[in-house]
Length: 469
Ligand code: NAD
Image (spheres, rainbow, N blue to C red):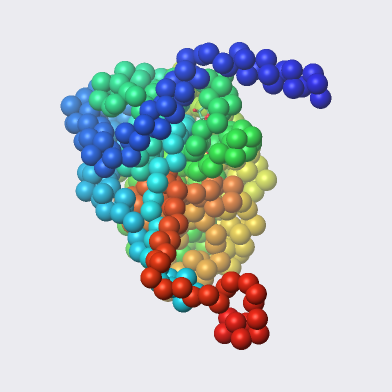
């Protein structure tokens, strides 16, 4: 025990004066001045962030191209444009969200005014993922600013161009008394996680999610965990298959399948299998032409290790389309696999790449059963025109979010909370939910001296008790 406490204290002392602890102390001190609480300060930061995205769009698009081979159009559609829309909405709504919300008061406390008032949490740590390296860093930062917090941002080291650009640009646009960017990998993240933050917002995989939550527990720091998982997609019979497959292929192949909410695998009725397969092949060619490798709208896998991981999933599987890859070029072709073994790695791990496994079933209840037996996904999809089945799907399946007859479009509606359930995460954000994720709802009751209800005072005699009951 003694040895352990010595270790801890030597760890603390080695942490005592590093760049990270100095930054954290600086932000804490600034937070306590109250400067970040003013609506004007929050809105100034948001406006400045907006002008950063507008002025530096080209540089950010270049960084996203370097990290993930994204075309400037896709970079705008899925990251920069998404963020500018979000910031504009936060600029409009922040002051409204800051206002106290009046609540009713029970008779026993009458007369009084009851309300809740959102207050910022303090200095927050935001750890980003690499697949949408700009959006997944800045979207929580926007929410944290709107709620009046200080932030240390740790972008992913696997998207180095975007990480470096964020570290360079944010100090030019934000009040750096309240913000800091720490670049780095496991060591830097571990050092950060040792500090008593007021909130940790983590986006990434389940394994590191557990490390984050364990570290947060040491300081009783609240966490939001935006994790992943295998998101299923049911294709029912008697639907507009053209439109359905167009949407599915778009959702799956955007960013080469490296999207946390993209459909991981498809479930179809066996009698529909050939139709679905043919349509998928047609639509892939229509959207990405015969040579996706040369198509500028088809991006790249984040690194060669991930190409090798994906290639490993194909071993022993029936690959009916694609399957070509090049680890050196970080390329992986759109690939379709038929009826993989549910116990194979392909069906046990989150694919996070352009492989589409299609599983055939004898009936819809088998499909629901298959999904239910597995971990709760971040998203679940069903393409169906049968209202009864749609209701059953919604009632039976637990998932972070659902979309009927489309893929990931719930992300475009900030009225809907975005987050996981079970192993796909905890907590949510987007719009007001993001503001709430970085706020504490403080309860406030203001009593009056004007009237005294003495029922609660001792001694509690039988008349008082009769009234109280
Ligand atoms: P990851 O968990 O490997 O890494 C994320 C972050 O954790 C990085 O910043 C990294 O530096 C840090 N990290 C890695 N190892 C660490 C360790 N041992 N100790 C401390 N910190 C460590 O995740 P990833 O590979 O970047 O992302 C892929 C996963 O993220 C997928 O599961 C995907 O579904 C999920 N994801 C979820 C969302 C969402 O919004 N819910 C969005 C994107 C990605």
